[in-house]
Image (cartoon, rainbow, N blue to C red; front, side, top):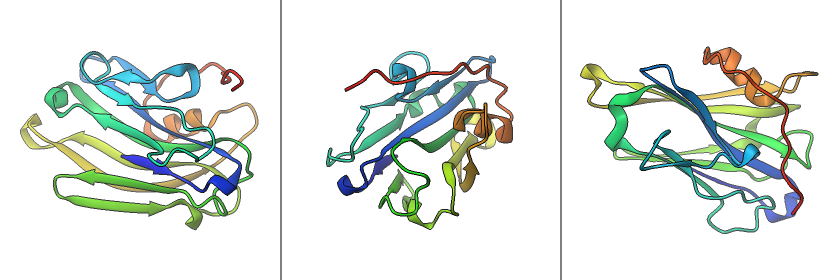
Length: 171
C-alpha cells in the first residue's frame, strides 16, 4: 500500500495500519510515535518512512507480512492529515493498494469537506485462515474535539485500543 501527494500541498499526510492478532495483541503502525513496525517480528506490518512534505517520489509505503497471515484477526489501513490542511480535497493524495489480484487507486481529493482521516481497507482472515481478505472501505472521518483521527477510526471498527496524545518531533 502506498501513499503519495502533491509537493505543493504543504501538508503532512500519514499512512497507518491498526493491527489486531488472534491472541489479542494490538498496535498502530504509523509515523506518529515513530511506530514503524517490523515485517519479521511483531507486528509483522511495517511502514518505510514518514514523508512530511510529499517530496519523496516513493511517498509512504506500508507492507504486511503474508508469511504471518494466520496470526492476524484484522488489520485496517488508514490515512490521516497530520497538519497543514483543513481536509484532503486539494492535496492531490492517492493511495495505491497492490495485491496479487490487482491494483486499486483511491483518490483522496474525492473526500467530503472537512474530512481529516479515511479508513482505506479492512483486511481479515479468509476461509480456513490460509488467506487474507481485503475489503475496500474508503470511509471518511471528520475531526472531533478531544478525539484523534485514530480514535475515531478505532471506535468505528471496534479495535478497542487505548490512545494517548502525541506529536512528531520537529524536522
